Length: 365
Image 1 (spheres, rainbow, N blue to C red):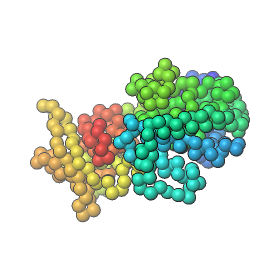
Image 2: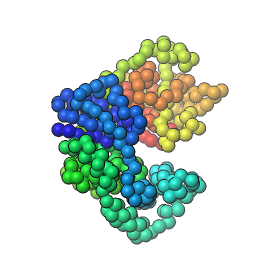
Image 3: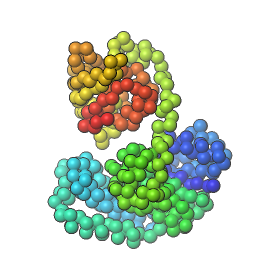
């Protein structure tokens, strides 16, 4: 089978490299495509069955200037629905993207603009959502995308993430359908279904991680649950094999920390989740494992003399905190982890880490 797999960015390949390699090892031809100028393959994916093409997201017809605005308007309206009433950040981000499309990048919304839409009645919101839905249905398959797909002659077309604010990958699915080629969406991250926008077109199959996400596909996107396939999370396959890149002494030395003391690592996240001023603003609970059972301690971190210091109970002691935002084995040398970074939280769980923290961004894990 020949598969065309269109990714939003080249770095998304890291998540799916294991799956792509497995397909190639079974004799399937995988044609990868992304919009980045770098169309080289990582060394580990060197195979005659794997190749790369450049995907140009912009349409080639008269819809090109407005299609992003239509989809971003639909995404913004989505976050006006009652179940997203508390999702102020999601609403602000989607409105900022919408205004960027409307103004061609010339304007940035003032604080609070995104909340104005909440004054719409349910009936008014539904009318606007009907307008965006009918406009999406009226947008035809793009001849430029059809030519791109036909040039690769695939038996199936996959995209990731597809669900994205104003997603241009909608046109990949739309054109593949017009050509009669089976389509599928491959979930990239755990929160794509809930926080990244709407599903503007239904692919033939949706490949998700678990049963919960199959339910989310149905309840959040009206996607037929029987067409949502739970495959596991390829993103975390490699995490089970992670090992420290250095020893404990070498890890602590450049940080100026005492390797003989227990360490708490605060794992930051994206700028959307946590700002620079939040980096040392942590207050929550840590749970450490003891032979007698779980021991819960309150923890507060503040910045003192340029260092982030955490204080807990008498037994817990005082700790300087190493701030990090990565997905490597370096957390191996921390006895405690405080994190709004959910990906690395899963990594530590995969590695049988014994501490679970409550992140400074308000998330609970």
